[in-house]
Length: 433
Length: 128
Image 1 (cartoon, chains in turn yellow, purple):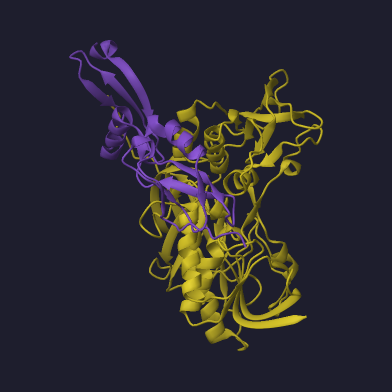
Image 2 (tube, rainbow over the protein chains, first blue to last red; image 1 turned 90 degrees about the vertical axis):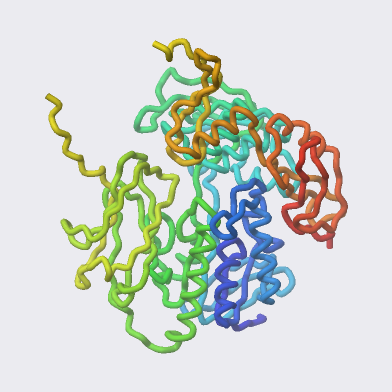
């Protein structure tokens, strides 16, 4: 078995992997990137629409342009990478086992590992739609790769389940390629993706958005012939008598993403309920020297935010190799970060007490949309150390807080920090009479 | 009431921010075009643009000959008139570009007669 050694090994060469590798390289680390696909770039290569790069490059780019700039930088810095290389195992002592066609099984001993494997899409199996197993059922991202990179159309008459951004963008994309998109069906009472996509991808082309509905049956034995859609009640149960048949030869599913953490779990790192590994404020997982960033940690709305987070992971990994690696340092004392009212999850899961005087970035999502809200951080049940007003909160928008906790007078002996989103306290209104 | 006589010409959903104001474009009694329902200057500007001359960036793919991939992603370097999107797509559909291609390379000049070029969104080497 061929063996390699490196300071920092990065798993995945998408937006997160490339940005973290570049950052670690700029901090004089020896870096190796392992990528399972045929080229560098990751999923942004198939996101050919525009809207990327406004934070990172201060201009509006398409996904491939965004990726190309990072690919060019990887080449300029001569960062080594292996393509068509599938990592199959990582160990606590930071050995990485991978396979590729040229070398067979290979082993890489790293001093630090950055996990940047991103997500996979939820499939039909995850949402249990009854019916046969005909051809013509795809996830939206899979169809996006077919149409934008391979030159294949998934079908001619399409129904899309789920109003996430990829689903809506594919509705327009397939319309432009000559398909008839019958409808985008959404189980929630509101659209899941951005308003911009609802307007420019659906309303511009008169594609109906049917909320409070879901697909309850797939018709057809060899090929999809249509779907039954049904209205759902508040518990997402089908309302009897609301069924309607919709003809189509293709069903696209845009029903969520699952962080791809099998490697993480097998290595022994714990995951949090959002599906990403539990990390501290240095993005370090439960395994010392193993860091996580990008969509494998938490699903982001914008690739720019992925790159920003990944740069931090690259920096923390380099700092680890330079200062803590091979020194048997005691684990720092930590404060747990918990999701309070109307908060779905928060990253990081822990803050090291030694970092209270540093700027820490908290990212989280709300559980349900609301207006006139206040974001609060509490270090004890009734002690608010930070608050900020926010007019409008929605689960599809990741909220970011940058806080220096020492400056907010956090109690250094507290054991938990709670972030919550509550209605703005009522302003007293005087009686009108 | 004056509002009752106003003729609603178009309803525009503002996409500038997540608030998503609905802006009504109306003709008032004097025949003037008025915009109602916006809550900021950017929203008003967007509504005017969207009512008078809606524009979009076109992002699609073009077929490639002898490339590492069969397609290259492309975009217009400026927004083009929304009405011209269909013409532009037709122009793109019949075109085949030989590899190699560099990001930013102009593949179709003045697409659909607009003041915009269609450019490649990535490098595309020849097939190995």
